[in-house]
Amino acid sequence: MLLTGEREIAAIHGKFLGKRSGTDVISFLIDGTVELVVSVERARWEAGRRGHAIKDELALYVVHGILHACGYEDGSGEERRRMREAERRVLEGVGVEVGDV
Image (cartoon, rainbow, N blue to C red; front, side, top):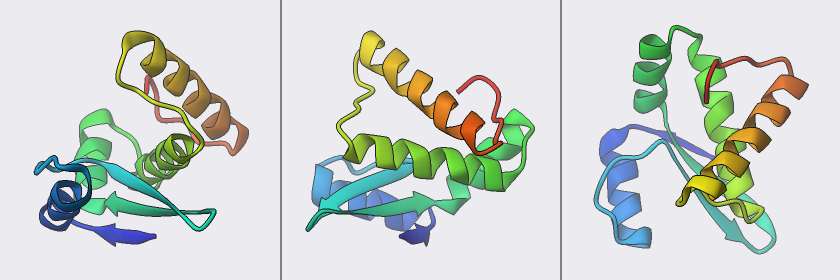
């Protein structure tokens, strides 16, 4: 896992996914393992905006990235609903509450 800032995650986003913008997490499935790139800057900002601890926001990003590697998507309304439901289940299971994800 690479913990980074907005500038570096935007560069990685552009290089590998063709989107030169910041994001919260990028996941790569490499040789059967999940590699994550997580923006700590974004997590700090979002945690402050949403009123919870940065560790909880980071947990959300890790779960989100792993779910992407497991085939979950969040492009359409139904896909997004399914992703959010899975995020909530996993986070609740480990005692993390981030409100309405």
